Amino acid sequence: MDYPENIKQTIETAIRSMYQMIVTVSAKTLECRVVDHNPELRNISDKLKTYDSFCDDLYANIHPADREGFLKFTDHKHFPDELKDKVFTSYECRIRHTDKRYYWSKIIFCNATEEDRAGGQDYLFLIEDVHELKQKELKEDAEQRAILKELQDKYTTLFEENMKDAQTGCYNRKGMKYYTDIILDEAKKTGNYIFVCVADLNGLKHLNDTYGHAAGDEAIAAVSAELLKSAPKGSRIVRTGGDEFLLMAALPSDSKETSEMEIKIEKGMQEYNDSHPHPYTIGVSYGWVLMPVRDGMQDIDEYVETADAKMYEMKMEKDEYRRV
Image (cartoon, rainbow, N blue to C red):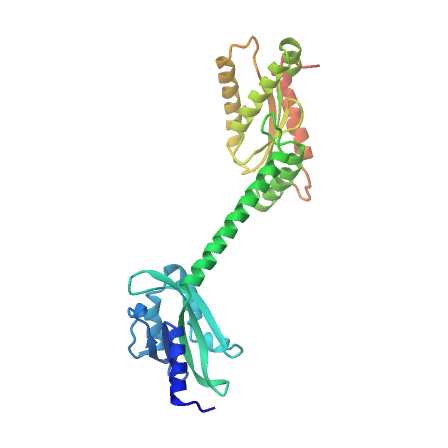
């Protein structure tokens, strides 16, 4: 349809006002011609160029974080195939303006067609200002992420509280089941060994019967605190009973943290006893193993039994109030 000249000029002005830059690209020669060029992008040359040199000039003004995507998008071996089945293709990135600051723009490729025929025609390279819209989207996205993080943090807190023993801060049996599966899976994936330690407070019944349950509770708190401090990095500490604890982790086969744990526990308990004027001594017996994951292994019960047997050997030696 033929339009009067003034209508054509109105349409052309409207189109130019929509874009910061309008560039034609020859399908045959890949020669670029800048049709329109807003002042904020005057740092990008408007001289007649080849497509590659034009993209190089623009690339120098693309935000470093967006350059890889820009290179893929502007690959002249890529976008013609994109436009075979699409009206246009676009990429959002930050472009440096004449004020040396970066602003969000949308780079658009489309066919310069006649009668909607794409084949063999030239291309239009358009740059559209989307900074305000993008800033709004990013702000809304950040707000949504903040809300999601707050909800996730609350869920994690409640989840952890549900699996922890209020008195000691160690995990309860729910936590034991949950983290046993995680540790076993981690060991299978990494090739690490399974570390299991069974610990038991010495003489709890004697403390309760002789000095009262407050003394027993204090002893449990002291031992659990020392286990939490001394356990190898990444360990999960479980209170499996009144005065019984289980430590477990996936550790390298040559880990030195297991033997270091023994030194830390003994030193920590000695310092605790030296600093308190109790008429009694608080102690703990323990036994540990560091063993590879076996084929088809579904739980760590066997390793717990082995560690428990070692703990009992120490208890027979150190716990003068043990029940025989």
